[in-house]
Image (cartoon, rainbow, N blue to C red):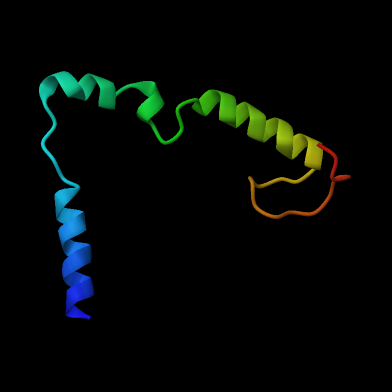
Length: 68
């Protein structure tokens, strides 16, 4: 148990590294975001919900014919 905890801790600690100022521009780019195209994904989600006749996001909901 202690060995597993030590391994997990060592992996987590080595994942942290200082970022140089010239590298921060790449990390702040749109492609590095969790959702790089929020407007496009919002629009596609709206279309999906309209087709499925389900309100309330991407959770399981009833209604619609099932065609996409």
